[in-house]
Image (cartoon, rainbow, N blue to C red):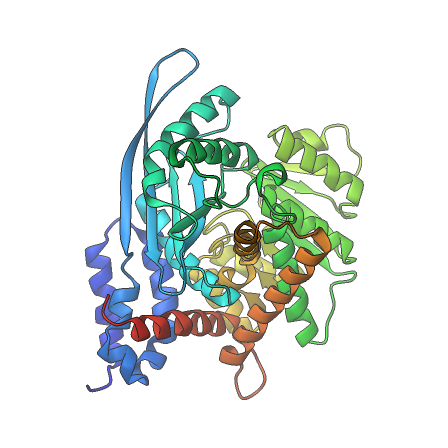
Length: 451
């Protein structure tokens, strides 16, 4: 079969645009991967003969369902639920559940597509999936959240299991929601098994799971710094977000001697010019993770904190930026501000938080840029370790799991270097992550035939 040209690449991507209008996040994620792996596919006859690219961009299946639940007034409410099972070529489907009123099928397809290659990079036998519902837990009573989770799981349980598909938490789905979801799964399946991860420690959960994504991002950052003969100590770090990922990334960065100066939420920017110390971070964690309140309240009466309504962290000068909030939160103009402010490393803690323009700017400047599919993989890595503990009916301690998490993040870094280093020694982590993640999945698909 003749090798394909760049015009074929444009035709391939244009065909997807026509097929999936209204799904910009999914198309963005596909463009990012396909553009990087196209030369590899051209040079690999087995990938061309087996039409790997056409097969790999299509999810195995998308399950869509109605979720009916009752609020505290007894009124029926209706939401839409999904599970996008993208690929199980290298293991059972694995990926989080997201509860958000703005959730769409296109966003879940993007997340499941990214998850496939992220999971591949961990080296663990995990496929890719994502799911969720148009439900907003914020402002709901515990009883309402429980009723919704039970109704959602009544539909979802038909499609998941420890060897089929193992969901976890994501935005809007924390310890409370996972508990209710697992309780309903156990009731319906009449089995106690590892069909969900992120569970509480009292019923099969794993140490370090809550911290894993944020800590993993910093472990990846440390590996990037070490390769550049640099270190984290005394570096100024700007972080966006104030959820689980952002706060644990801030916690680990401060432990490593960095000066973390920003956090943010949907209302605006919390700036600590002198840096967040452990006591301040504990206050923020209590406010955001326990009380689920606004960041602005933490700054009230404080002489060391400033809250700026409607602002983001990207105008604050820093050595390192960690976008940890949500997809496409950092655009081309933000990238320009960061580069003008002297940023030297940008590591994505959220899923695809930088727009294509921002990524292009960082790559052109040849700073250390770590893409989400590599740097954000800590959560699923420890979820995989939770699955192993459940299967063996064992619980491992925090020290062992932290060490394993760091080892996995360093191995991910090294895989990116192996496929992303140029002749001058510069590492394009975007290219490296995409090629390394893609190759493992593609090889498995070739080996398993046309299925």
